[in-house]
Length: 259
Image (spheres, rainbow, N blue to C red):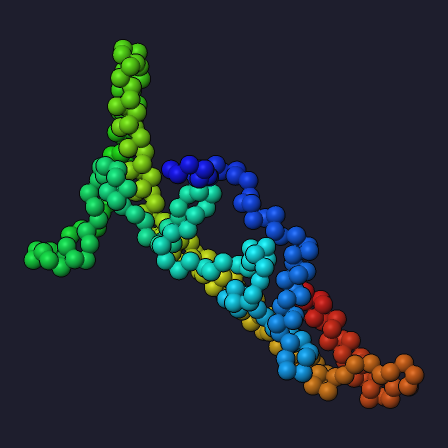
């Protein structure tokens, strides 16, 4: 490491980077003024414009205002978070790529199954190897406790064995994450579909009840098709309007009684 170069920041509760000092109300106001000035047209009037980070980076900004422009979104490679490199790839790296001993066989790939002339290989039984690793963890822990009682200075090798077993078990569980996400999405969509079907069935039952009530009123000689609301208060209802109002009131009383 070069002299004077700051060390990598790896703490989980790290302080914010020094550039936060540039996010002041004065700098934000200056940036807004520059954006308004740059968005003026030929008539000298400023026009409302949604600035993209690329357009802001193309402006001639002072050094203290360049920290207010969002950086480009990384599309490949790695990015740094609190001094630790994070990969943009969603593929789970293998244990061999991380330099860790793998205690279970690798899952068969399409290339290996294509090259072989025999029957296609069976998929990896994750549950079987998880059970084996769990039993190995119990056995190694008992051996670790016995070693501490006899010769505790030889604990390091057994601790490494336990660590390797835990990492392998954790990696096997992570292989299930895509399957877990897919099954969770299926369950959520099935639940939404079930709720929609229940709502449709409820509306169908309500429609059938209303249709039966209307048919009952028609059999009683009530003209439900021409039934209207009550007449305005300042006007005296006619005989036909009064009868229609009574029919409407009777209709609503029957519906309320069914509910």
